[in-house]
Length: 400
Image: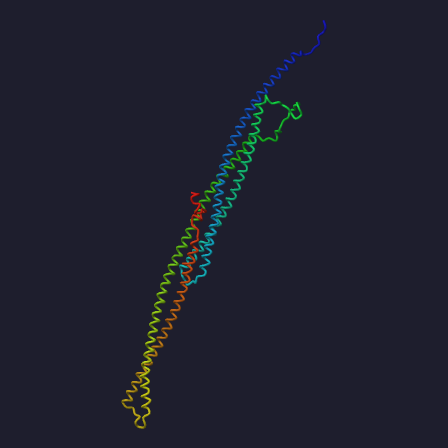
């Protein structure tokens, strides 16, 4: 009997090969199913975190827009405060044209205007400091939004790629596996593992972005609330100071008006006294004219009797009477001249007093014109409190 050659049975080899392929296919199908489930879970996680990022982006955008509106309101408030400062400077410039006569109310108005100027300077300084803080916070908000947008974009791209991976696994039976080289399949590892981030790092990165955005959002809200409150308080302080200035200004106008009325009455009184003095001067002058005639008669008689010859030039009763008449007329005439000089001197003093009162009255008119007409018109342009708070009168309903 011929010796049989030792070799494996081909039928057994084919059967074993088929069993190995079947087992490998089953194991590959099972692992692909598990991988598909993990991919689907990963897509759910990505969608969850994308939703969280999207909500945080909306919240950050809302807070950023609110803070930006507050910043614009701050800029508007700075502009209106600048108008109030120019109004204050105009008032001080006009007040420097006044003639100071020791009026304490006027000095109080000047002091209050300088106090208002210092308050405005301090207010503008505080507003600029708050504005710098708001600008820095706006930059922080922009950085947080940028990080969230970048994270959201990457996650959306990852969701799209993982969806495709799930679709490839689901349609794997219908997919013809080919490579650019043809039917030859080579094992490729894909992206190297050392270039991939760990899952914990991925979670930490997303959490850090969300926490950073949340802190920026909370800080932004606090700054906005504090900014609005500060603007209202500063506006209230400025308006209170403006009311104090206007109250002192009204007191100054009232005092100047009372002084003007008093000066008017004094000037009218001096005019009456000057008129009386003029009447007295005219009356004394008329009396002097009346006395000059009898005096001339007496002098003529005395001269005429002085021409008597020899012994007839005697001091008789007629001469005594004529001498007494002459002395009486001279005394009266001298008395009237003295009274006329006194009346003229008195009238001169009255005229000087009236000129002094008139100069005071002119000063009073000048200062009253400044306070009552010019200054009141300038102060009427002072902004209202609602404007100083950063609201325009036409925008009041929109901000309520």
